[in-house]
Amino acid sequence: MTIGYFQGKERHLYFDLTDQMFRQRAIVHGERMGQTAKIEDGWELDAFDAFDPLYVVALDKSRRCVKGAFRYLPTTGPTVLKSAFGRQFDPPANIDSPLIWECTRFTIAPDAPRSLTRAGACRTTVELMMAACALGLEARIAQTMGFLRCSASRRYRRIGWAPEIISVSETGLAAGLWDISERALAAMIDRHGFAPVIKHARR
Image (cartoon, rainbow, N blue to C red; front, side, top):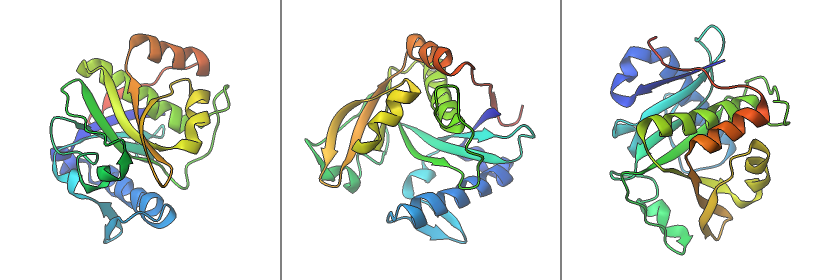
């Protein structure tokens, strides 16, 4: 499996990957999670897809089939946390830093093979999280912020990269910060026995 990435402004160059990613988001974040997502022509899009995010996709060996994806946005610009969505957290979480990026719309394709790593974690999830850390290191950021269910904390401990919970909503959704470091990436590689192959989608 390979991890590919491209900017939002490049979406037209990677229509097939973009089409798969947004259709998977429609199923996972719209239909299954019951989120208030805008689904149009089978795609799930929100306002933040207009701000040139970095899209990161897990690809099969042919590099044609998307197995999972997430979206990265710098917190110095518009983010999900800064929107009305963020007001549900207590204490209020307001992050605006050139050293922190927001990771959202983390999606595993519904039809992706559920192969496990030697630590018993979903391989696609692990590869995407390794990529989040590795790309963060390349961008010289210190942390990534994202959302998770409080009940999912065990999953991140199994992966070997657990967040610091900074705020929780009444629905059990938490905002967390993951530290980005060479040590964190090395720990995941050691735990699962492989390192991600990360390339720009065009390479």
